[in-house]
Length: 138
Image (tube, rainbow, N blue to C red; front, side, top):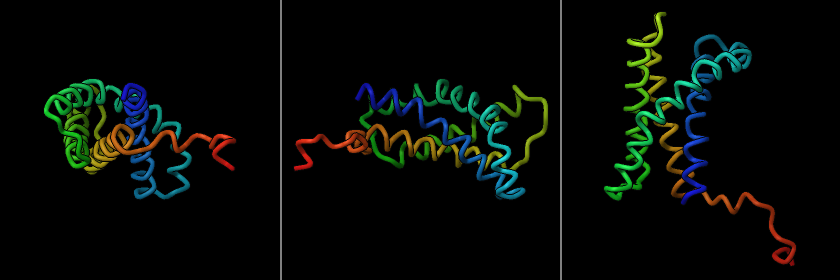
């Protein structure tokens, strides 16, 4: 579980940037979204990792202690944490107004991160991604 846990914590917050690329595509079009990827990565990725550290890491240890390893738990918790992180960032960190739909997009980003986290940690077979050995080809 050690390697899976590290991979899950490293990759799942990147879903936030992906979700906001989709949000920009819905708002202004796909071409603008593709052109906005560097800015989206620059703005959203640090906040996603901060939210993972503040909310996701403690939640993981609580869920593990309670024996909770089902997808819906991580998806729901991710959605709540995404919404909460957006609210905290809008209230206390940034000084510009955000679109009200960003709260919804943040909840979707959190839910997506929770899903990816649980897939990596509990279901995804990382060994299947490796090349088959020569002996298994015969």
